[in-house]
Image 1 (tube, rainbow, N blue to C red):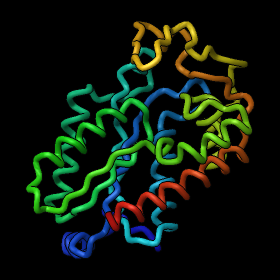
Image 2: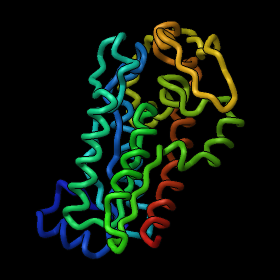
Image 3: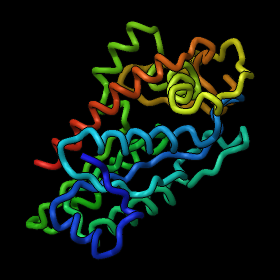
Image 4: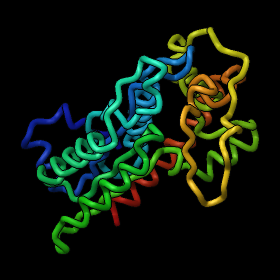
Length: 252
């Protein structure tokens, strides 16, 4: 059914929709460098499109909140073109927004993420806010990045097309932008960029290396093989799986 935009509703209409059990989707993204060829708003454009199209596809009502277009992007600041919130600020802003949504009457909220740097922070917000709610409130909070939601579907595409998912400003994200807005993709592509393979890999351990992003120019894999057809296939799979998630949360 058609999604409803929070910003298009009056206060009374918001309360009425939420009282009726509508799922609220808060898309989270970033404004950050995406190599020499993609616009800084890639993540916001992509997750907004996914959130809205999934709402149109799902057999349940969803109210789509405005995209949080600033994320936790400190690792991109050295390249310029990035507007970032610190870890603590992002957590606080996102938590404040979720609590505002609950105050308006929502009982089911999904943080649908489109930027990797936000992922763990969104999960913490969902956990912490839920812990503060009365046991009888019936509040359900969920947090996931869209590529997590569609992990199995995207794994099949990854094998078929030999594409890193999601990567950063590489073949995956360049393909999605070609599908959404081909004019936004600049022709100045480097032939390849390191995949960060010089970083130590220890199974089960997160390892962070100072200066890693600068060492491979801020994008993780070669965007030269990106195509609009691949982008359309990615988006179709993601939208289908996100719509299914909406339906699951609506009846949880």
